[in-house]
Image (cartoon, rainbow, N blue to C red):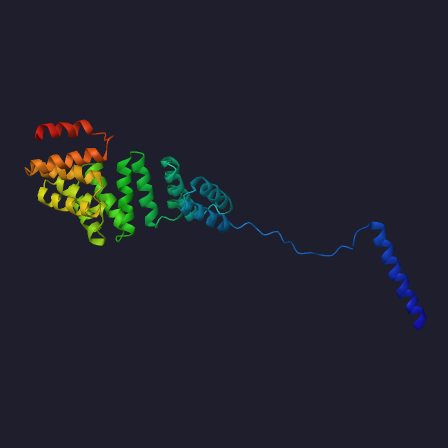
Length: 258
C-alpha cells in the first residue's frame, strides 16, 4: 500500500507540472488590492504647501482635486478662495468664501476674507457687513475691528462713532501702524485734530514709509494751522506715491498753504 500511495502522489505532481507548462503561467493565487484610495487630505495639504510658497495656481489645482473628493469641506474652499485672492481674482475668491460659509457659518476668518474680496470689488457695504460678522464671531480679532472701522469711516464715510469704537478696540488689542492710521483717520473725520495728529505720529513711528499717514497728518496739521508741517507732510506723501490718484488735489492744497 505504501508503494501505491507513492505512485499516486508522483502522478499528481506530474499532472500539475504538465498543466503549468501548457499554460505558461503560474497557478492563480489571491492577492490584495494594493492601489491606495485617493485621500482629499493629501491634495489639500499639497495645496496648503503651494499656498505657503506663493505658488497660487498650483495651489488651486490641488484644492480642485481635494474638492472633487470632499465637496463638503469648508477648509478647502476657504483656502482656495485665498489663492484666488492672491491671484487678484476677487470674484472667484468671493465665490469660494461664500461656499465655505455655507458649509461652516461660524468661522470668523472666512467672513473677514470675504469682506476683503468685497472691498477688492468695490462693494464696500457688503464688506462692512462681513467685517461685522467676523467681529461678532471673534471679538478678539485685531484686523476685523480695524477693517470695520476703516470701511465705515473711509469707504462709507459714515457712522464715525461706531468706527471709533472698533478702531479703539483694534489698537487696544494690538497696536500696529495700520490700526493707528485708522484710528487717526476716524479722529480726523470727527474733527478731533489733536487726537488725529497724535495717532498719525504713532503710525509713522511704527512705519515711516506709510504714505497715507503723511497725507492724513497733513490734513490734521493744516486744520490746526501748522502750515509748514502740513506742507512737509503733503510733499512726503507725493514723494512716496508718485502716481497718487489725488495728486492734483494735494498740489492744490500745497498751493493754498504757500
